[in-house]
Length: 283
Image (cartoon, rainbow, N blue to C red; front, side):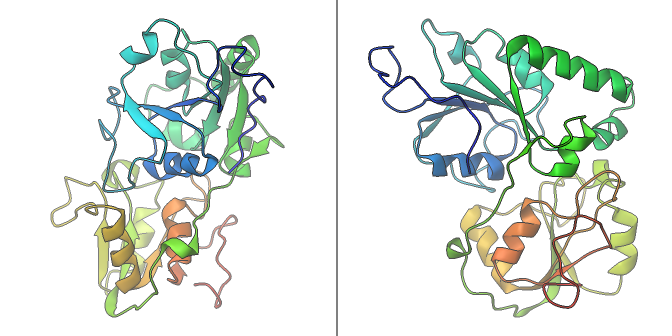
């Protein structure tokens, strides 16, 4: 993974900076943030933020990356706090760290349409796009998206895309000895339209399916204990399921890519951005 932060000064010690670029991000998506560990740079992760689906780092998804530490937002107000690059994941994040100097990157993880669909009082999409562009212009911020379609939905057509991935070396051999499909998803009840949940239920109503994720309103559904447990679950299930509304979400997510790395065939609805080759890597 490479992020478009400006290079640090050549003589970093002379400028009072860390010998390696020092990064800051705000906890949003553990599986995505975990990838930042591959950069080999010191990383502070602001944890315990309000109004988040999971209030603190979820070890059931990923361990804390190497060279990283969890801090509070209050810690970033300490005197002389400096970062070479600050990675935000929402407009709220940009507001939370507005007191800090340093280059800023906004990572777009969701389509604007899905954000508006899940927010009854959301403003006009055009207004949202223009406000975000003006603010980023004022602060000199950069934007990357996890997919081209998500960048385009926010008005950044042709912008930088930093795709996520999974290293197949991290996963044990696939066995597929559990005669059931597998779906990994959080907050299913709140995201039924985004996840094309009616299609999922109708398509797999007569087939055993294991659901894994943080869904406290769904009896018998639990998140994985840790990443190793998740890998084991993947290795034993027969196939993986991903369904999504084509206008609200991509035809894949990090769980889909992880399942493919673990060797599972992928089943889902027809979607223009699906990475699945019908009859080869799934159906």
